[in-house]
Every structure is written in structure tokens, then in C-alpha cells.
Length: 385
Image 1 (tube, one colour):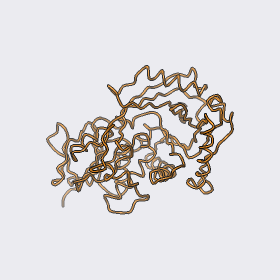
Image 2 (tube, helix red, strand yellow; image 1 turned 30 degrees about the vertical axis):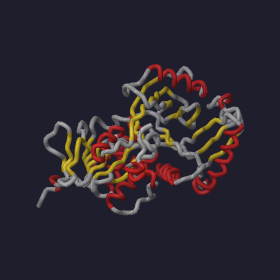
Image 3 (cartoon, helix red, strand yellow; image 1 turned 45 degrees about the vertical axis):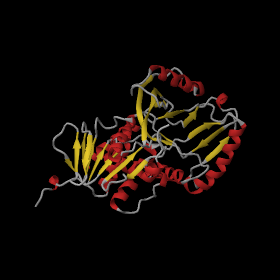
Image 4 (cartoon, one colour; image 1 turned 120 degrees about the vertical axis):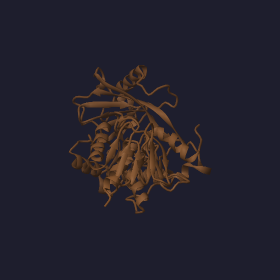
């Protein structure tokens, strides 16, 4: 009888970020033999960031994408609780809520309408997720009242997680129940033979199916498999401050920045989005800019020590929505990338959808059509602007 270890993997995943590891987690729990192949190290790309903002789309102009994200965020607490139980590790998750300043009468009126629509979309009676407009001066012990002259929105669906801890817990699960190789860059896949080629290695990895999920670098491989480039990288930067005493404060979104307190006594500030960049390193001038902008609307951050700076390249599809599913012209090659700023909030539901597609079963919640390959390739492709 053949040794199971000599059998091909059911699934190889190229990339050990939040999408790749979440897909591995879902596949293993579905009974598949899985190997994750990471070009550098776990969380080397944008999944190794600091911010951890799990923020919903606004409850207005509702569409399948917003419904998918809502379902993902609503179910994330249970998912993370189970992962923490499986691994004995904490992910730093909490439903922290979010403050949004209202700076004009038009914004006040607009968000009053959103508050009404939230009652239909967020089902507050059953879920407790509220979206309320509060008068000027509310919560001014955290957000400077001068930044919100027409009041604030306070909503309770928003949450946060510690990105590196979340990724670390997934890594532990995969290592304990599957296989994970770092410094193993996927450069090709012989689909007929079921062999994954690794850079600088003569011996390929035997696997029946391959998922390309290596952040923005996945677009290079996707282009090689399809002849079409459907995404790019955008640089983001963030920093971490000492946040002692601020652990239970809500997140703030103001002046295009997030301020996110974490349970370990830190506060994350970020993040920028630059289409043009020369490297993936933190820029000191950007760090100073982030700090000055954040302290202007959140004076409680003034004079707090900067603990860590981070910069990374996030994957963004040209059509904005993520790419999830089987690549055109292939039977056993899939992609899962392009989550950009919402990856951590939707990764577990994306993983369920992709593994359900591979196993030909119904997902917990269907993917939006705009996430599917047909939306990104061929006649629907949008070239980078």
C-alpha cells in the first residue's frame, strides 16, 4: 500500500498571507491534504502590517459586495474564536466600533439617511449592530470636537484584529495540520502532470490543484497563466504608537486615516496609498506626516512613543474588487488575491467560497459576481489607469 506521504497534495497554495493561509485553513478542515508555498516568509507582504482595521462599507447603495462583506464581518467573531481554540493563540480581535466625523451639513444629512438604511441592512434588533448620528461634542474626549463640527457617526459593526497575531494563529494551524514551506517561490505548474515548479529546485511538488494567492506578486503569475494583467500593487504605510490606557477606545476614521487602538496597549495609525513607489520601505517623511495628521484630530496621541513603522505593497485588482476563482483556460488553477484594504475582514468567507468551488459544494454565502474571474478577464478586463 502506498504511503500517504508519497501521494500528491490535494491543494498547493502559492502565498502565505491572510488569503493563502485562510484558504489552507478551510481546505484542511474540509479534509484536504494541503501545502502552502511561500516565496519569502509568512506575512512578508501586506498581511504583515499593523493597522488591523476591520471596517464595513457604508449601509447605502447596497449591493452584493456590501452584503458579502457584511456577512463576513458579522461571522468573523465566531471564526476567530474557533481558530483561537484550535491553536491556543490570540488574534487580538474585538468589535471596537468606529467614529466618523461630520464636517458639513451635507454630510450630516447624508449620514442621517445612512443611519436609516442601516436599520434595514444591518438588522440591529437581531445583531446589535447600530449606526447612529450623535450631536457635535460627542466623544470629544477621544476625537477632537473641532474635527466634527456637525456631530459624529458612531457605528458598532466595525472591529479590529492584530494582523500579525491573526496570521500567526493561521500559520500554527497549517503547520500542525498540513504543510508549509517558506523560501519556496512558485514559478510554474504542469497542470496535466500535477507538478508545481519551485524556483531553483529540481524536484517539483506534486499537487492536484494550485491556488495563486501571493499578494500583488500573484498578478505576475496570473499574467503568465492567462496572458492578461489584471492588477497591480499599491504601497501603504502605517505606524504603531504606545497606546497605554487607550485599549478600549473605538477606532476613528478622519482625514483619510484610521486610528485603531489594540488590546496590547498599542495604537495603529494608517494607512497611506501610493500608486507610485520605489521600494517597500517606510518613508520617514510619511511617518511624520501620519503622526501629525492623526494627532491633529486625536490629541490623546500627542507625545506618545513610536514603537514600529511599517510599509508594504498591497494587491489591488484594476477593477477594485478581489479576484476569486478558477482562472480562464485552466481546470486546476485558481486565484485569490486583490483584497486590498478589506482582506482581513473577508478572508475566511473568501476561503469558504473558493474551497466550496473546488469541492463543488454550496458556500455559506455566495461570492459576488464582481469577485469572479469573468469580471476581470477577457472583454471585461480593465487595464491599469
